[in-house]
Every structure is written in structure tokens, then in C-alpha cells.
Length: 282
Length: 282
Image (cartoon, rainbow over all chains, first blue to last red; front, side):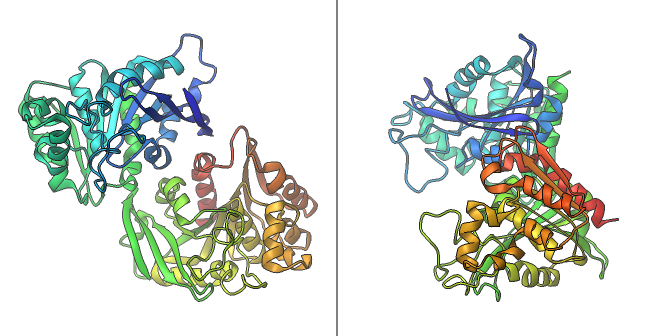
């Protein structure tokens, strides 16, 4: 692993790192915040970890610079990891002028269709490779994990959490793409990455996963009412309905006047971190 | 004024605006955060204002996105204004490949030398034009102002505060260029903007202003010990010495292990806002 930068912040250390990924076949960049509790930790002691998955067009940098998570992580002793949203590099296929497909739009799935299937394997990267890598380099307790994300990353957090019961103590999302199979962003991405057989899409759709029997006990969602993507792309209502039918009791909060930006995310970030920390340190 | 963006955050509103400036002869962009207390304010009621001046290469955007000031401003009911660091535009003279002079490096002075003197008038802009403009558009109480800044903006906050006794209740800085007349950044900028007569530089040098009799009762400075610019460019020690000789009692804190970045600034931003708020609401 290459350490690209290290900056002291809120008593802890903010790292940005890169490494060659087996899953994607590319160099991948991510950030890790170690809270002050990581310093002077006893030999075998480890800290809980919160994974943050970002939205369309983002890299690790957006939340790392604008997410305002470090204060809360420092208060509660939580390690915060923010991966990239897709493979990158000249040898990775892409499409011109489409912000919602290709680079920056990995949708946290393993593509099965050419030319995407070689590199677009963000599911394997996030579910398998990155946790092992991070746990080798940092004092991360893989027995105490939670996951969260924004927009496409909210989709990622919900679907990864629902598909891996028992792995995450809690799942939260800002403005998640809750039902990608039935919105333009999702139909485009799932159709091209996975092919036209919609049965293959269901494991990458939080609402479909719940309809198919997946369950999670601790889900928190914040959704701004002034979010320009709410009606057409996000489908918070469909998530509420699916959870209700399944007897699940998520906390889904409509936040008056907030939009889709990091001005919204940062407002409620500390609450999300504290909510996860309550479950990670229980 | 043009409203370029408006985003709800921490219950208040983050604005980015632009306007044609008389002082600089250019279009100028700045940001204003209105805390939630601004909503439903009685007709004549106003809120205190905290001015934040940014460092070399920055625009309003750096602190607006990475400064983590909104939570504290929302808690205390403080309006936060972040101007740009220089005039911009195709008709503004600049130098290639110099990050520390020209655009992005206005040094909060009124230039007297050609070709800079026409547009590089950031002192007049910040001291005279912008406060009047902001007070016409927002419920800002010009009787309750404080000022702060980072690096070149720390120099700006200290010098503007020291030159205008009684205007600001408090002055704070992160990693200020405290004695520009005797460091490479300052010698280059003051020499080219103001000419080689060093007597003209003294009103743009916090240490020189104090030596010449300027005083301020409430000064707070945070300086990281791992700041790569500390020894050569910032001269925190010279500020301490000048204050001691003058009988001033600033709070100057060396912060162990912190560097020159927004990872440092954001760590202590809430403390600075609260410190100013204590004086603005006393």
C-alpha cells in the first residue's frame, strides 16, 4: 500500500492510501480516519469500523473533505473508511459525457457484461478484498462493523448490508437509491453492467432484496424533502413500503428543506456516526 | 447581487453570491452562512457577524466546503462570511506559475504599483465595500463584528483588526503570516504590490503594526507544530514577542502535530467560533 497523505485531525490521523486491487485489476484509492483512541492501543486491541460508500461522480475525497465525520469518530473511537466508487485508470472502459455510468458509477456490483466485467467488480472489492486489506494495516475489529452511504452509496450500504446478515451491526443511508430496478439511474446501470435479465438485478436492489426475504434490524435513513432526485431516482417511499410489509422497523426521516448535497449530509453526519457507535460499542 | 447557490445546512442557509465590485473593478464571489436564528427574526433584529479570510490559492469555496464552521455558527447564532482572496477575471493581471502572487494572493492590501494597482484593492474591498454590501442584503449587525483567517488570511485578519480599533470585538487566526515584511511570501508580495519602500509595508504587517502602536485586546492564534511553513514563512514567535513587548496578552497556542491544512483548521474551528461568539454576544 502507498500512503498518499497523512494529516492530523481531531486528535487522530486522516490517511489517504492506494493499492493494486485484485478484484478490479486496477490501482484503488481510499481514505481511513484513525481516531485518537488508536494511538497507544494495546497489542491486540482493536476499534470498530464504519464503512462509508459514496455517490455518483465521487471519489474517496468528497466525504473525506466535506463529510464532517471526524469529530464524532474521535469522540466515539470509530475508524472511518471511505473507498472510491469505481475502478479508475486508462485501461478501464468508460463512456463519454455520462456521469451516471462507467467511472465514478460502479454501483457496488460485480458486472457480468462485456466490456465492464473485467474491472467493474466493486462488490467483490468492498465485500471481500478491502476489509481484509484494511484489517491487516489498521487496528480494525471486523467483529464490529457498520456501513453507511450516500445516494448510489446508500444503495451500496443497504444492499451489501442486507446480503450479509450478521456482518454489520447497523446500516444507514443519506438519500439512497432504494429501488434502482425501477428508476432511470438504476435501469441504465444494472441493464448495462448485468444484462437485460432483471432477475439478476434483484440482489442489487434494496427493495427487491427485502421482498425476497433479506432482513436487517438496524436501519437509519435520512432523506431531504428538497432533494431534486427524490421522486424520480431515489424512491424512499418504496423502501418504507417494503420494510413495512416485511415487518421491519427502520428509522426513515424526511428532513425538511434539505437537498442532495454534502451541506445536507454534513448536517446529520454526527448523528449517524453516534447512532452507529451506540450499536458498535454496545 | 447574483445568488449562485443556496443550500440548507445545520438548520440555516449556506449562500454563495457574486457581485460587481467597485473596489476591485471585477466580479467578486463570496459565501454567507445564515444560521437558523436568522429565520423569523423580528424586523429590525440583527445577528453578529464573523469574517473569515482565506489563504494563498484559496477562494471562498475552501472554507465553505472544508471549514466545518456551520455547526458552531448554528449553535451560537453567528453569520459567517467568506470572501475570495483576490480579484479574478481575464482582465486582471497575473503571473504564470506563481501560486503566491497575483490571482489567489491578494494579501488584503491596496496595491500602489502598476500593473497591480487597478484591481488588487482587497483592503478597500474587505474593509469598506463588502461590509456595506453584506449588511444591505442580510441581517448583519455591524456593531457586533469579529474577524478571523488562515495563513495569508490570518495576516489579513490581524492587520485589518489592528488597523481598525473598536470595529472588531475579537480577532483570531490559524497559522497566520504574522510578519510578512521579513519572510519570502511577504517580501515578494509587498515588494511588488507596494514597491520597494519598506515604510509602506508596515501597515500590512501585524508585528510592525504592533511595534508602531496598534493594539487589540482579544487575539487568539492556533499554530500547528508540524506546519511546513512555520519557520520560514509564518513567524508566530515574532508575533508573541511583539505582543509581549507591547503588554498585550494574546492567546497563542502551539498545537502538537498539526499541519497547515484544513484538517487542522476544521479541528479547532468550532472553538474559534465559540470564542468569538462569547465576545459577540456578551
